[in-house]
Length: 291
Image (cartoon, rainbow, N blue to C red; front, side, top):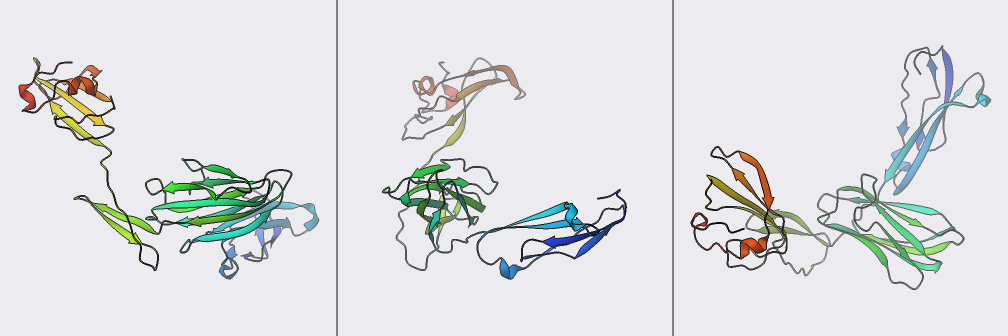
């Protein structure tokens, strides 16, 4: 508001949890407005929106000079599974917010339509963007619980938003459930090793299995040039007897280096079939590359 002539403005709030001074005086310089929140009235999880309106003290019917909108999100903590049975009017939306900690291990949100034409469920990440996986599902009465699952490797710490939308023309009665996994992987160490955490007060039976899903390697071959290196990224690892594992992926490239280890301009692709036809069971430098 800098640069304006001196003016007295009255300030009012349209929410009982949002408090503001009674007014401010503008005298051509920037002015700050300090608002406070009543935490006792923000205890229940949900979305709170309140606005501070500024009007000219000399003419309060002239309309607002400016407004300050405040939005507060109080999420469900999911210390226990969330369960709600509610009704939506035709075309209406109800928003739910769930806090997901850093080592949550995943998130599951499901909706079941009890009456009406059905309902839509949308899931948004803490950034506000739609969930990167399957971010929406539709359910109709008679279906079992239809939901969205965020696996542990994809979950982001923060507040997720789940929206239930009723179709136009008819309302819907629905049930919404949300929960974190009972057991989560707290840490993965070397060895390999993993630390599991039981989030429930009861004893859990857990089945653990591991799988190698990626590997990277560099092998040197004899060639009539100083250095010849092959670097491969393996998309799937299987049992193998040669120096390179068998794999379906063909994302393998070779590059030619000079005596100083500097890459030359030439670079080409080579398939795993070509490498596996010439298994390297001895010193790689004793075998030529046949490509």
